[in-house]
Amino acid sequence: MAGYEYVSPEQLAGFDKYKYSAVDTNPLSLYVMHPFWNTIVKVFPTWLAPNLITFSGFLLVVFNFLLMAYFDPDFYASAPGHKHVPDWVWIVVGILNFIAYTLDGVDGKQARRTNSSTPLGELFDHGLDSWSCVYFVVTVYSIFGRGPSGVSVFVLYLLLWVVLFSFILSHWEKYNTGILFLPWGYDISQVTISFVYIVTAIVGVEAWYEPFLFNFLYRDLFTAMIIGCALCVTLPMSLLNFFRSYKNNTLKHNSVYEAMVPFFSPCLLFILSTAWILQSPSDILEIHPRLFYFMVGTAFANITCQLIVCQMSSTRCPTLNWLLVPLFLVVLVVNLGVASYVESILLYTLTAVFTLAHIHYGVRVVSHLEQNWFYLVLVSSRKVAKEKFQKKVAYESSWKNWDSPYKYWIISRYIISDIVSLMSMLQ
Image (tube, rainbow, N blue to C red):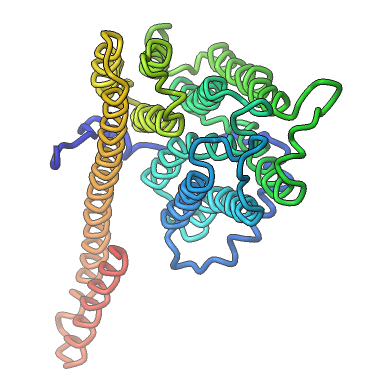
């Protein structure tokens, strides 16, 4: 596995021909966030790599997840009668969430600003975004938590899947249309939740116990916003974009089966994980909700990354993801009946396997694409240097009757100049 290559030669060839195409029609993004990001990106030095900005934003999201896991490990901290999360934690989480969102919006602008945009950068960005979904949703859950005033862990599990399917829907669009239509819900949710974190620090979690309108609680508003955004905004716009591409005869996949292949693995992941929850002899979701969410989110991220690789390289998406095999075996064993501690061990083991497998996948894909991109730059640079040298040699050949010692000094200067230019292009 250490040397296994996940990217096929066909996909490498597809990446070489890839052209970025995205459409952003969100008014909040166009008229507020993009002008803000255009200002922020000027603060960064030009030597700062865009991928480092992307990774820094991802690490902030992970840090928020871990910080909240420390103060609210079982999602009871916001419930009445329990020790609440300190106010300063909400402020830190709110600020870091907005910074992470800003870095996610700035990285592409930094790439274009420094003329360093590559397919690898886009893959790295969207791949980390797919894993950020679970960190973001689970961290938000701590605002309401479990208990009489909160949301049950199973409802949160369903809401997590609403977010996950909303995310993969955008990349399903691009897989079929060749254009990434950026979802409206992302910008709205990031700005809103960052604000809610700060408000929670000011008014306290007790404020969310009160009804928002009549008997409509804030937890119900939280649930309604996630479902409503998915059903009333994300899904209709995705279907509309797909239909427009169909009418314009620009779909990349003509058959219904090929168009729907990207949904096979996510749907099977949902079925298997839900079956585990419903058939669990120890009620595994109630015992280890955070770990179960993370396991599902990591498997989903791996599935989505494979889809992104395929849609960027214009290759066929795999029908099933191999991570579903160990999950199926675990669900099968659980369904036969196991002790509570054995089921917990299975969950911990499966989560570790998924995490290591996903990290290995990401590292190998990035490494493979980076090597391929470096090879292309090397070949291109050598070709350019060779052409320049040949032109200068042809020019210098007219000096054959000139025996001045300065002739050889000038030729040497040209050769050194070519070498320096080549080295700078490879940096």
